[in-house]
Image (cartoon, rainbow, N blue to C red; front, side):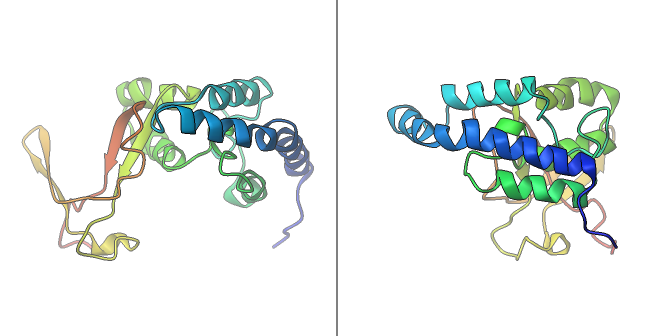
Length: 190
């Protein structure tokens, strides 16, 4: 396997690095001040400015492999960009590449109906809303999804979910409009 960066990835690395140097790192103290002076769950003006700038520069949704929706990068190609973004606590969000939204968008791209995509995926891709991810459970090591006890069971035309979750990433963000619940739909399955 060749781990050398392709010309496309090298060009994106340079652009992301330049963006981080010019805008993200200098914004860190401004962000901290805005959070300290406001409500930590409300979006800050500086973050919204960074997002608008990154989007205008075409540094948006870099994590999505589908080229019509993102940069068309594989995980191997995206990894060096994530490494650069990860050098700042602000890094991923200006690029619309922060968790749990990234994983939730990937789930919606793959499994959502057209109606669900219009309602949740498209606003997530535009950075207008946020999402949450409920997997962790109090009584099991939830980093291994096979340990989950929460259930999602079909009852006619509806799904009934039962279980206890905690540490639900993204749930306190006032922009959160969708929560993806991880539960067993077949407790006898592998």
